[in-house]
Length: 143
Image 1 (tube, helix red, strand yellow):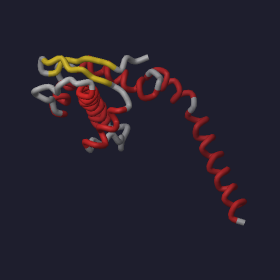
Image 2 (spheres, one colour; image 1 turned 180 degrees about the vertical axis):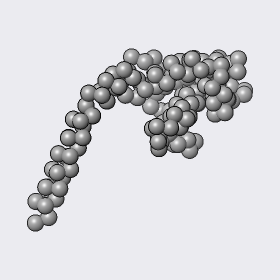
Image 3 (cartoon, one colour; image 1 turned 45 degrees about the vertical axis):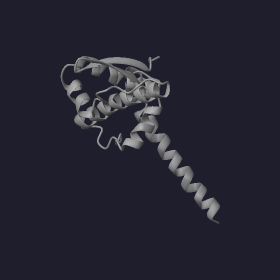
Image 4 (cartoon, one colour; image 1 turned 60 degrees about the vertical axis):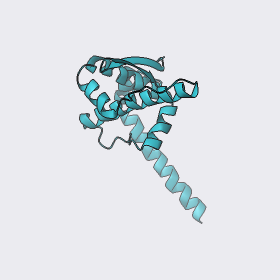
């Protein structure tokens, strides 16, 4: 199980992260789009995970403020996390990506990859059956 409390160092400052579902509320209020349009575009996937880390940072600040802690004097911005993930934090960022996937799905990357390989044909067959069932039920209900 992934620990939702993580720390990283960005620009020499130790930053707390809180990876919980409330970070998605912040994405809606801040207008950060977390929609993956092209899963084959590694830059797009990378950018979405950087946004997740940034939102985890904002989430930790919001929860700490609720508990009476003051916000940092200098707030980091998304660009700071982009630079961190591309440079000094490259290794740690890879670890965080794995943890975010496990947090969101409850499964490790290895488990998800094994499922994807073993069930491709099965999923397509199930989808066809489901469509057939829906078509059949429409015919029955429309008479």
